[in-house]
Length: 82
Image (cartoon, rainbow, N blue to C red; front, side):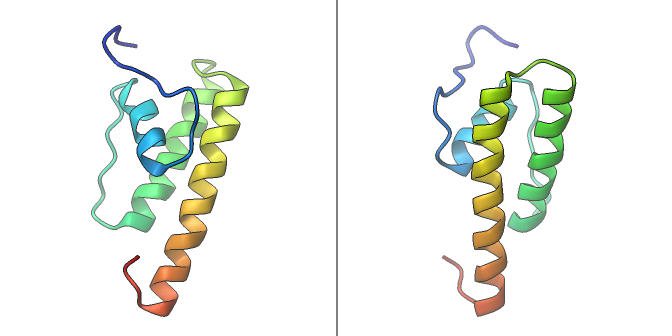
């Protein structure tokens, strides 16, 4: 992990989770938000399984991703952007 990268202590938004992944040089952009969220979840799982992030961090970030995934599915279903 790079010393200049700040990892948020709280995870409330997708941006916070992106910053966590960025700290490990993981940049996710597939081009479709739903797929980005799914790939971020996989990368987060890999970091946790490798033992480089704590359980508390992992669980907080997973909650954000689950919420964002659910909201994105809802947006896609209703045709609304946000």
